[in-house]
Image (tube, rainbow, N blue to C red; front, top):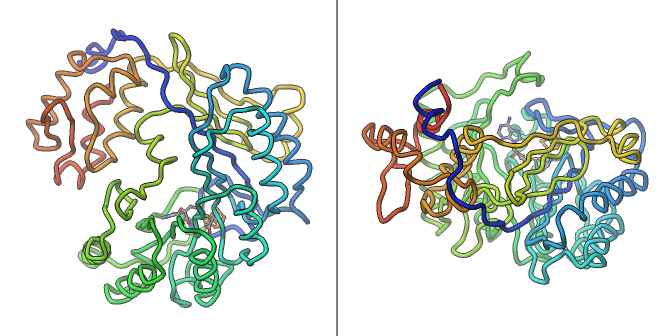
Length: 393
Ligand SMILES: C[S@@+](CC[C@H](N)C(=O)[O-])C[C@H]1O[C@@H](n2cnc3c(N)ncnc32)[C@H](O)[C@@H]1O
Ligand code: SF4
């Protein structure tokens, strides 16, 4: 057993019940993008909206008793392409939560939308149903980049959808990708400039990665080489900082006070119930922290939810898992975390991780100041190496 494993062999402080959030997975897309490894599928024919909604409601009501009335602080409709669902379906789910008395009145409620499936009636309907934050998968405002990414929309669709989002939602996010096939620094800067001009409260900017089991993994496009990739990333981050977006997490940039509360809860290791095909949950009980995963294929999920066999995995996390998972999330935050949060969320004390903490600090990957652990610029750059310090050998 390695030093880290030994160091966290037991939990020493009481678990505190953390905030609770709800993730709802809507697993269909008009067409699968060649870079995407999310649990998303092209439907055979029409999306089975009614049957899936029924399954979600059964899933939700089956899960609620174990949560003993704890309310949801945030709800996130993610995908796949949630904007393929009607406002009525989204509203039914939110009504179900309200009727059960488990939705906080000021809950942040986000829905992901694809510009290729965006129209005014849908956006208005989502807003009227209670969605108060829209997240648009823009990726780029340039036709050649969108074509190279196999997107179903062009740059004008992206502009139209963003204009609509800005008109109807005072809180909205744009997803952009950079490091795209053939992309120059100038082109990446133009995307950021155009995005910022629409006034989103939040921008998620991801460097394109080639994920296993995707079309791009089998047929890799030619991506900008180093040092162009680093130059693009620097320009993206500088342009966002100049426009007063705070870079608070690896890929997330927000206007002051407009950080995504839902994602922040993940990174701070709060609890989440995930319903829908392939959704994951992490739930704190009196003395255990449990992880669940639902059946991944939409058809199998819908068939099995009725007889209660829709969980593909249920596992209590041991102290080694807890430390690894806590660090994988919390170290993504630019300002790190207070040590007290580690104890509250995992039951591990600061002294039990003294050894890896010291080692990471000695290597210049993090700093410990006023009982707060914060990744250094070097630690942010080599985040995987920093996280590795806390994994069992
Ligand atoms: C579930 S999708 C968001 C909404 C919607 N499905 C869409 O694509 O319009 C989440 C985001 O992850 C990013 N993403 C997905 N695959 C990626 C990859 N291989 N590399 C970088 N970013 C990726 C994209 O920016 C995408 O918008
Ligand atoms: S639309 Fe979004 S979820 Fe669907 S395949 Fe494309 S990136 Fe993945």
